[in-house]
Image 1: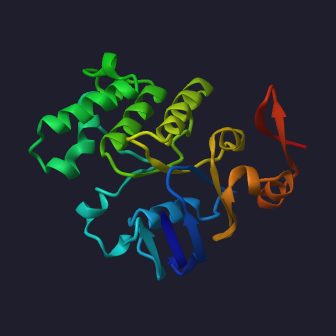
Image 2: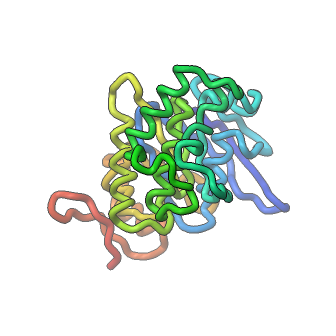
Length: 253
């Protein structure tokens, strides 16, 4: 479980997060939603220990995330940011293998190679193993980066806008894979991700964290707390939560 208590953070004299408190259960796919400037990415980065708050605490599985060294944090959570940086001539397999660094620290063993192979297969990357990452399509490239985060073998995975600029085919592909990872098997992961596509969030999210102006407006199981009224108030525009062919969608009015 993630427990956040009275979290506040300012940057350049501007308050970004205001007294945020939250409990996020394990084994869920949690969508962080809200308008631009709501503080979604900032909250995710504080949860990952990448940003240090002015006040408040973040406990992940009972451990104060900001009191841990970077290596210890990397065994508890993986974070995929919006900008992954340049990876010239790096092969897909080598990229995925980077996820194992916190475990072997430069001396990979059979267990590491097995995890890398499993991640490559799980994300359908075997045929692309020797391709350079910068030669991939946007969807293939993002799948490779998510596989790298998966290979880190952490109980928690945080992803900041992993669907940005992806075609619908790749959006569905990645979200299907992520949601399947939260199932109750031996390799179950807990996932929190920032999403802008509300229909995707409605279809896949088990848990919702709705943010506005640096505050949490609502948090809880998606089906219990998300309504047309909540979404309309959150985004200051009329929105309706509906169904199309049995699948939830969010439409503007």
